[in-house]
Image: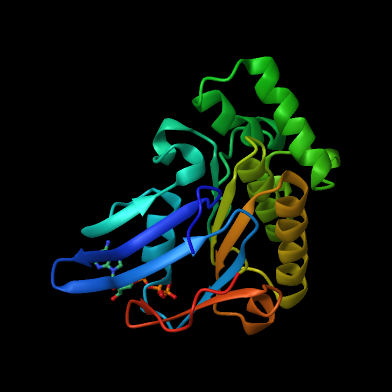
Length: 220
Ligand SMILES: Nc1ncnc2c1ncn2[C@@H]1O[C@H](COP(=O)(O)OP(=O)(O)OP(=O)(O)O)[C@@H](O)[C@H]1O
């Protein structure tokens, strides 16, 4: 049952792109302490559903709500952290500046942004990398910095779309360690899409998607 402590509630979500219905009639809840892996074959709708959960796309019909955020994430910049397949760091900014960037864009004072970035980098054991430029990082390090960037504003929810896809199995395992530990430390829910069963098996909750629908009960 949904409660006001939930970070996301989706009711009868549909997202169509022209003739393609990517998400069809999905009803789901993300409790505050959720650790959910979203699995399913390519094209089953994982990314589309995650974009709805993250509030970066809107449903064609149905209702998406974020009770802890007073209804809508865009009024609360930084309360949802997003990690994508590639880190997408700004190449001309060093690691500390990249991690501070979302806070600066959310109009936090520069000093507070720098402190929050430093705290996130320490939390993820990345403080040694603060002054490096993105091209001086390994793929795994860059992706961990992307996690720090998502975590720095102190989100209630972290949405990660195939964050381990470009990593080898050891790098993937390390990144999942970092994501789970960070979510625990900041008290955020975590919803992650993956093709990798070794990654999905680390999560107690599972949404198995097929043809735009969740085929298993969302267990969290
Ligand atoms: N912007 C878009 N325009 C048109 N069709 C889209 C768009 N985004 C997704 N789709 C279609 O919606 C369906 C679901 O796509 P989605 O990316 O959500 O699946 P996925 O399970 O994340 O796939 P993958 O594992 O390959 O990333 C696919 O048929 C896809 O082609």
